[in-house]
Length: 73
Image (cartoon, rainbow, N blue to C red; front, side, top):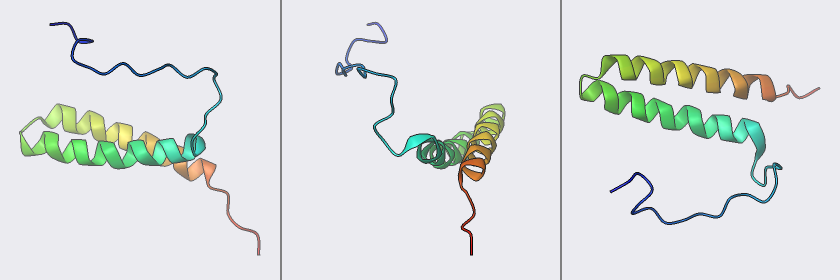
């Protein structure tokens, strides 16, 4: 069985334009997902994988921070 078998086919996007919440929303999703995955990795003594996931989370959080503009008062 290949990696592609057993997966439902998803159509590719028809353009490079995001149709979601943009980069900040995607980065926020990635930050949350990698935090959960890092916990899972550590629960199973996969320390290096947990570390790498932590680094991905930090990068995603930095992207979110840079995309959030402070409101002017």
